[in-house]
Amino acid sequence: MRTETNVLIVGGGPTGLLLALLLNRSGISCKVLEKLSIPSSHTRSIGIHPPSLELFGELGIADSLLAQGVHIRSGRAFYNGQERGRFSFSSCPPPYDFVLAVPQFITESVLREALVAENPSCLQLGCAVHHVTDTGKSVDVLAVVNGTEHHFQAQFVVGCDGKNSVVRAAAGMEFLGSDYPDVYMMGDFTDESDLGAEAGIFLAPSGLVESFPLPNQVRRWVARMPQHVEEPSPEQLAGEIIKRTGNHFDTTSCSMISSFRVSKYVAGTFYSNRTILAGDAAHIVSPIGGQGMNLGWLDAFALSNAFASVFARVDKESDAGKPFRALTRYSDQRKKAALTAQRRSELNMWFGRSHAVGWPRSLAISAILSRPIQPIFAKMFTMRGL
Image (tube, rainbow, N blue to C red; front, top):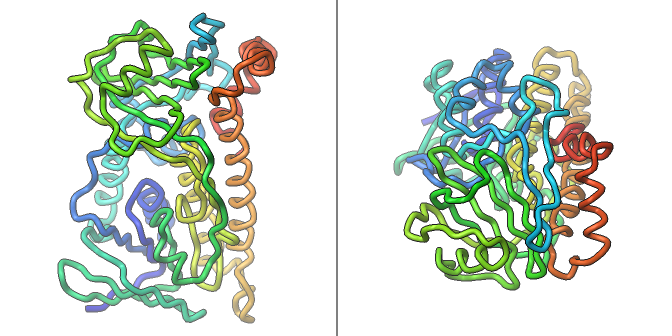
């Protein structure tokens, strides 16, 4: 079987789904190839920042997400067991002067339903991509769909297929980076804290604890660990939380437990010939700060605008075999944004390292919680300028 379209998007996660929705709204034909037959039900990323909410508002899908998530308008900061103050997102432009906490599977469901409502044939589930061939004039993709080989051809292919991107590897694009020394454990439990709809940041001698509310009276707890835990347990995480924060909760209420290492990677370029990268296929940033998923959405928005220029034939550089100017700008600007996000996430991690306990960190916390600095902190945390 053979399918032809303008743009092939490999990967039907948050970035790929949003890019497809944007391209459909622009009248650019596309196809999303997702290897999973059944969408994941893992909570995974939970924070949607104001710039993303603004974009979703323009697309008419924000209200559905807002109704299913928790609006985090402020948080409380604790240092060595003592509350040091509150931070707020009230300085962010209304109406989205908050961070929305909602499980990733809900977010993906909203995006998927919006895409299918507009173009029922756009999303191909159970489609495992095996080979990608970029000829310089078009792209050929060989995939297996429900056990049957299927050939796809397009003018462009976009890799939204994560850290181990098949698309990136096929194009021979570099992916440079390294692992941080930081490792974390996280879990979702019934919320028995007094934090309500607020976030909690706990800085203790043994390391950072972050806490965020989720829908249905659930709270996520994230703790920096001295070493990676191969088989995490709710009891082990609860022990760390109690020791560092004093908060107790029922370990039998755990709906998710995991441990993870943290790394940083960025592609050498996000654009080569007829291949473009977006989301985790293009960059990996630390999840501390919750910027990775949102960074991918900002990629999708920028790339959809670049494609609009290309397909409107405003960009004619390629007629002479040269790169498309709009796609070159996309690559340069989004790589710069990814590097900025990496630096911001590194600052977030520095606060949580046990060896950082002392007067420099105490002074930094006091500065962030002060009225003159809070709007700047809120702007950085909520990804303005990326």
